[in-house]
Length: 468
Ligand code: CMC
Image (cartoon, rainbow, N blue to C red):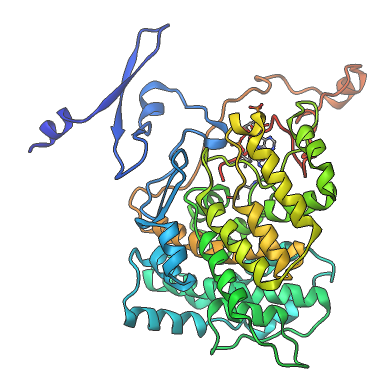
């Protein structure tokens, strides 16, 4: 088939300007699944117009073969495998291999990969000194942003981003070192000695060991907790072009250092509308306090004049049950039964879930409990302090971030990310000398307008947030 014939068979959408009568044919691209995409790359060149899509609610920012989500149907798949199958049948490091390489590992590949990750878990001893520069009461996510960014100053031998081999070494280092850094942040806060990683333990076991053991007595990792931890890692490993992954891609699109790019992802994840929601769920349950106060708070969440939101409910993409939440709910029941936890906050959580699932406001807006609602509950039962919850999310999501970063760098369509804007500011005006400005009586206007206030933990019901 000639190029001309191929071109003739292309599917186009015609954009028509009803004032000038001009029109433009925009090619329609088909993925292997999911909504078709209108290719607007030539739109500005041909029409002089940009498109407007704050929060990227209708924009495909890249092509990707890693993760597929159908939010209406509640489907999440990594490299074609459903999250339910992966959570049931695989371990976190299998999922890491899958995300990085595109296929599940063979026996030999699995052993080699586990060996590589296990043998990269220690951090440079100088990182201990660096970490000690933080205040003891620093939020562990602040420490994670700083220390992971600082890795770029330690590992110079794997930062040639044009070399696929070096990109893979950076990926291994990040996946391996994140649990070590997370556990160090916690130990530093407690004032306990850092616990070194152990090569005989699995990824999840090793993390629990570094978090909860002390040099003074033997610590036996509970298999139930290790399994639950591993499942939490699997369920948070990747989630398509969410806010933090898009941040990593944007940072990486300029050719930035991989460790610095992941630090930018950690910063984005920290917000309560994204990964910070698991911590916010616990704060909310504490604020509600008792089962009898749930109805009052559910009402507050619906009041347009009240900025308070139910944390752990709703999702930009899932307008059906979040499939990760379904799996975690079952896991939560298992863990709580095993640990024999009797926490009054769990009653509050159960009542909240019950009322919200029946309430017209939540049902009509398709606001279901999301992954963070249940992960917060499980992590609390497992003994993690609330401020570590988002760190656990960051540890798990690192493989997703680095897989997307690698994919982007190998993509011929890769360009530096550079969105445009709809400018609403002043048009050109002559410069006014200071004396003239002094004489002016007009009050100076606020450039950014009033603070919207994230008072549902920095939030506002009218504020739209980038996709999860
Ligand atoms: N509580 C009360 N009302 C809500 C909530 C909530 N949690 N979430 C959305 N709404 C309402 C919102 O007020 C709006 O109502 P109306 O149509 O009357 O204006 C409507 O539902 C649509 O909300 P939106 O803000 O336009 O939806 P969005 O897609 O921009 O935001 C979200 C998605 C996750 C940021 C939001 O649902 C939210 O803030 N949830 C709480 C925070 C949370 O749990 N985040 C974790 C997400 S899952 C983890 C991850 O993958 O990062």
